[in-house]
Amino acid sequence: MQPPWWQTGVVYQIYPRSFADTRGNGVGDLPGVEAHLDHLAWLGVDAIWLSPIYRSPMADFGYDVADYRDVDPLFGDLDDLDRLLEQLHDRGMRLILDWVPNHTSDQHPWFVESRSARTSAKRDWYVWRDPAPDGGPPNNWVDAFTGAPAWTWDETTRQYYLHLFLPQQPDLNWSNPEVAAAMQDVLVYWLDRGVDGFRADVVHLIGKDDDLADDPPDRVGQHHAAFQNNEVTHAYLRDLRTMLDGYPGERMMVGEVNLDSTEAVATYYGHGDELHLAFNFALLHTPWDAEAWRASIERIDAAYAPRRAWPTWVLSNHDQPRHRSRYGSLRRARAAAVALLTLRGTPFLFQGEELGLADAEVPPERRVDPGGRDGARAPIPWTPDAPHGWAGAEPWLPWPPAVGAHNAATQRSQSASTAQLYRHLLARRRASPALRHGAMTWLDTPPGVLGYRRSDGDDERVVLVNFADETATFDLPGWCVEVDSLLPAATGAAFGGALAPEQGLLLARA
Ligand code: NOJ
Image 1 (cartoon, rainbow, N blue to C red):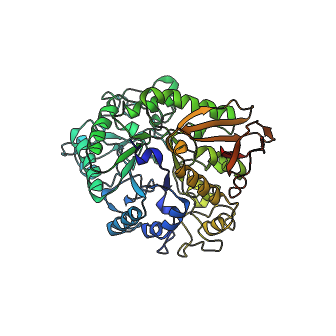
Image 2 (cartoon, protein in one colour):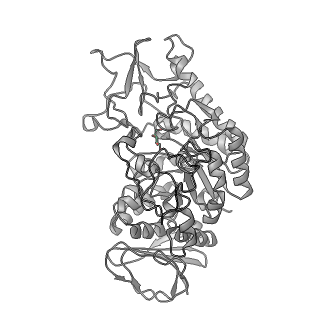
Image 3 (cartoon, rainbow, N blue to C red):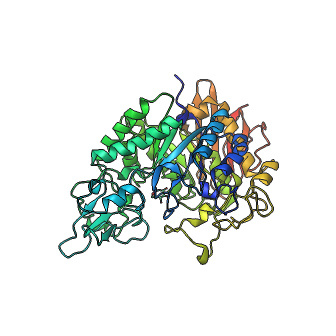
C-alpha cells in the first residue's frame, strides 16, 4: 500500500501577510498566493499550509480568530480561497489550513457573549475563575508572550478569564462538549469546502485539568504553554481523528505540539489514532553540530518507533529566527537543507528559506509582534528591484537583507542558487522511493560529519553533511553526486571521498 501524501510529500508554509501583496496596502493577500503558484510548482512542493486567513483583529496576526468560517477582508474573501484551492488541486497540490482550537479572539461572538454575564449561555465556553483569596489571579500561570499572569480580570462579571497567550486570546474550555462540537463543526465546514487538512495550533493545550493547579516551584515564571501536557487532550484528538478518517479523500491533521520533550510529542500520535503528524521542533533548537544533530534524530527515532509514528522536520517557521540567521551563514543553511529534505519523515519548509533569506533587521519603531518574531516574518521579495513584486506600498515589515540577490526571480535564474538547490533536492526526493519512505541507517562517519543511508528495495541514497569548517574525508567508492549543496546543478561526478567545509551531499549509486 502506498503511504499517504502527508508522509511522502513536502509541505510549504505560507505566512500570508508576508507572501505577496496585490492590492497595494503593504500586506500580503490570497490573490498574492494565487499569483505565485508557478513558483511553488517550479519548486516542486506537494502541499501548502496557510497560516490563519480568518477574520481577526490581528492582535496576534491571525492567531486570534473572530470568525472561523470567513476570510479576513485584509486577505480577500471566500471566493479567493475557493479559487486558490481549485488552482492548487488542478496543479496536484494540497492545501492545509491553520486551525486555532485553543483560543479565540476576545472579539469572537462566543467570547463577547461569554463575558456579558455570569449567567450567559456561553459563560462556560471559556475558562472563568474567581480570584485567589488575596484577590489576585486564580493560579501562578504566566502567558507565553509577556510573562505576565495568564489571567485577566473582567470588571463587569468580577471573575478572571484564562489566556495562555495574549489577553486578546481567551482560552476555550474544551471540557464543555458544546465547545468540542462547535470546533469540530469548523473543521467540517472547511472539509466540505475541499481542504486537505489542518495544522492545529498549540493543540497540546486544549485539554486542561479541572483544578488548574499552580505550576510547581521549578516552573514558576516559565510560560505555562511550554509544558502543559494533559491526558484529556488525547481523548479530544481521538474524536477528531475518527471524524477526519471518516471523511472521503486523504484528509489529515498535523498538530503543533510545542513541548520540549520528544517523548511527550510522540504520545500525540496515540497508537495511530490521534494526530496524523506532530511537529517536532527538536532540530530547530539543535545547534550547528553533527553530533548534536545525530543525537536529536536518534532520540526522535527511539521515541517514535514503538508507536510507528512518522517524524516531521522543521528548520524554520514564523515563530523562530530563520535557520540561516541562527547558523550565521548561508553555506550552513544550504548544507542543512540537504538533511532536511532527505531525512526519514515529512519536511516542512517556511516561505523564503528556498531563497536563502536571513531575518530582517527590524528597527524598534517598526516592531509590531508582541512575541518579538518580526524578523522571520519579513516580506518575500519576488524581483530584484523595488517594490520587489509587491503592489507598491511599503510592506508592513521591512525587507530582509540582500534582496538584490535573494529574491525569487534572481534565485530562479542562477544555476548555483539556494532556490535551485531546494528544487533539485525536491525533484530527487520525488523520484526516489528510498528518500520518500525508505528506511534510514547511520553511517560510521568521522567526527563533524553526519552520514546516513536511505533505502527502499534496490533504491538507495547516501547523505553526507560536513558540519566542520575544514575538509573531511570519508571513503565511499561506487557512489556519485546527485545533489551538492555548493553546486546544485553539477551532478553525476564520482564521489572522491572529500567533503568541503560545511558541504552537504546527496549521493546515488554510480
Ligand atoms: C503558535 C503559533 O505558531 C504562533 O504564531 C501563535 O502566536 C501561537 N501559537 C498562539 O496562537
